[in-house]
Image (cartoon, rainbow, N blue to C red; front, side, top):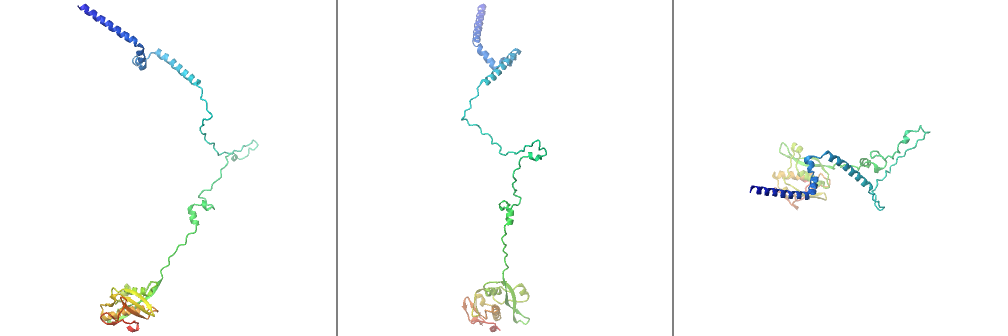
Length: 294
């Protein structure tokens, strides 16, 4: 039994080996191509000297053949319609060189230099043409507009009257002088200055104003040398009594009559003529002059 089993195994091995060999023989060329493509043999065992020597002449032949092939390839015919690339324009600047003959050996070497180009005047240089001058120089050359000097406002000298209390308690009128801007209504401007009160210098001299606080000149006009002065209601109430009323009337009449066009003053309260001023019964029903207040 053992001999039979051994012979069966041997037969199987022989048959199996024959199958493998036949498959290998059938695919030998394919296996060889794969090994050559992957360089399996060279990477494992290394290339032999003979193979290297054989490869060198083969590569040379390939190179030679390649060169020969390229030489045999004819150049493509250039069509007349093919547009050639544009060539750069020739330099238009020419250099004029004078030829020196043997007999003119003493000529200056400057003749060999290129012709000089015409000089262009620089902007910084002064020229007669105003278009070529810098803007700053044009501005300096142009006439400057005349500067307008504002003349000082015209002034007018006026006379104002205030009151002064002497050592005995008597009221005395005092004249003072000022300068105010000149206007088209000098009488109105003068009376408004009077209503504004005394200055610091006038107060230091003891001058006072008896015109009631809050008095406003509403209008002023002159007719037949009579000044019609219209005041508000505050003008008819004086806290100093009769002496205060006389004092305020003296200040207004004497100041208004400093103008040559005025001889007397007609007082109006809120545009209306009244006979008496306040509750003290001071007469204002007719024009008052300096003489009527002495």
